[in-house]
Image 1 (cartoon, rainbow, N blue to C red):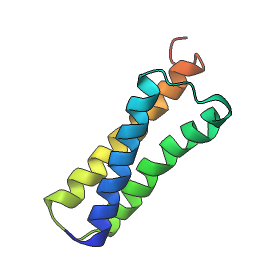
Image 2 (tube, rainbow, N blue to C red; image 1 turned 120 degrees about the vertical axis):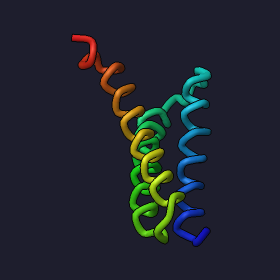
Image 3 (cartoon, helix red, strand yellow; image 1 turned 90 degrees about the vertical axis):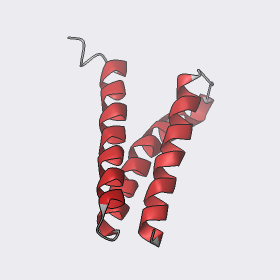
Image 4 (cartoon, rainbow, N blue to C red; image 1 turned 135 degrees about the horizontal axis):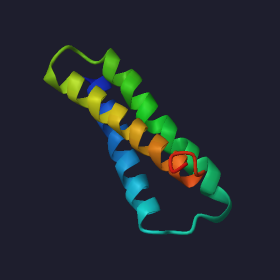
Length: 86
């Protein structure tokens, strides 16, 4: 594993920790909006770093998992604003 794969994996782990913190219902107060925006930025950064990683199965696995994370948080934000249900 090269450094880009490690950084991509770490951004995915940070996203997962943040997601389960949000899922558990922890009140973030004034940090809610920056927290939610950072939940978009960490998988996006992980995808970019995944593209810079060396070729192999791990590269594409990290890219796919980070894209799934982006889609998941995007769908949750659509549900939060009522767009997906209408």
